[in-house]
Image 1 (cartoon, rainbow, N blue to C red):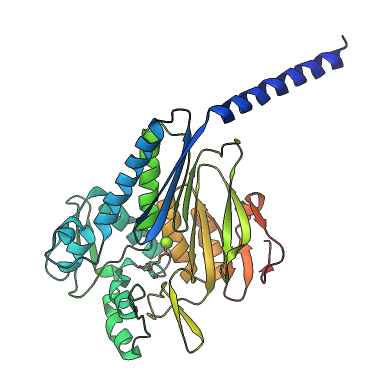
Image 2 (cartoon, rainbow, N blue to C red):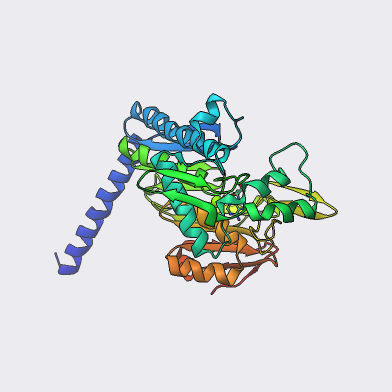
Length: 354
Ligand code: AMP
Ligand code: MG
């Protein structure tokens, strides 16, 4: 046989072995999926592996972590109830202006992240937004535009400078009475990351967690290719504007279409500019791709508030990727996403590759 013939034979054998192993692994691999309503959203966890009995056990551990984080950050229980005693955020808010509160290591970690990115985002991100969120009451039955005088009167309570964190003592303190933490911008992603870590501890190597727009994938998909994650058209719920391919990473979207109401033909949504107290109006949606779902959740909210160019510059500086649909209908993304993003034709948006 010639040298070329040999090479061809080796190549064919190689392909055969790869094909068989893919076939075998596809036959052996089992899927287990489960959904729960948690943190005000539908959470879905899908795990894959050879050992069918191990999959539900791993998923139960993952949900255990999500419930634990959800209980820590719940800010709505009534003061004095058991739920409030179990929630660090509820206790911190109840003790605003009175005394520091000892908190769980995960609450401390979330608060440290919040403080750090409040500064890095020049105040676009601020977890002391609670009192103004309450005025709008987006989660309530009849959300309404608050009187501008009450927004102006409440804005001084949005003040991360007055959030004191003591890492050694593991305490947090809101210095002014009436201040309220709201970790809604990062808790879902943080909980998603914790859930993923629980899956890994249980030996899972392939998984997809979707917590209301917070997507975190573990490994590659069942065909050993990157997962394909759709980015929604912010004005047409069923349509997609783009597909991002992901392996071992998170893609988290903040959008003005998740929670909003309309009044006088205008949309009022749940992501507020901390300085004005009104909904941020630079973007319709921002998706952040990063290794960590907690960071991606935090940053998608922060970037949503920022102007596109500033968001792109900060994303580059932090080494994370983003794709955004601006309020003017432009789709832009960081250059790091070029090889992982497919912008779909036919939408009402203008695509500006960088
Ligand atoms: P997300 O869906 O992750 O973008 O988070 C939105 C939630 O974050 C809102 O429902 C509020 O609880 C909170 N939030 C709103 N505006 C801000 C802001 N500027 N900084 C931090 N958290 C915010
Ligand atoms: Mg967020």
